[in-house]
Image 1 (cartoon, rainbow, N blue to C red):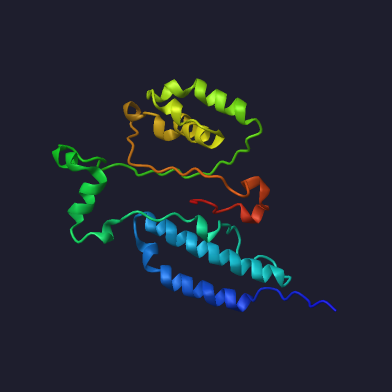
Image 2: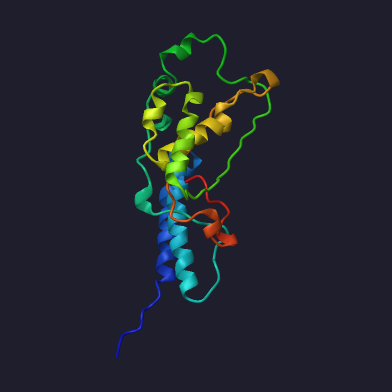
Length: 205
């Protein structure tokens, strides 16, 4: 007689989530990419707990939490807390030329706006897609960029740059850039592959 498969322990998953929360708590207050890493670590373990509860016949313990595998997390770069002198971090991020600027990078006054989004796509014809992006490569005003288009993924990264908000200029209309980051990757599930309760809060990666 075959042995029954015991569901994962929700209690153990909950205790592990508590451990992760305590371990990542300080990083959640930071203002650099280590906070993103901490958020991702919490999401990973939160999904383990949600799956364990679901296996026991209950609904999702969380709404709108989804994540990726722990081994997909990249090594995080240095942040301001890694330097004894804040000026050293400032120099690393902005370069020596920063001190020569007469005006700050960002105006002191003004409404701070932020745009975050996630859009997923499925490549159905890689050759056609790469050909299309190559035809627009000159818009990047960099002769070498076309050599970087090796496959659909690299083509997608360039397309996001060409059509993204970060490539547009709005200064003459009263909107000044104040920094930005982008993330591109191959994902296991697109948003429309997920059920509605698991689509929310799926970024940053």
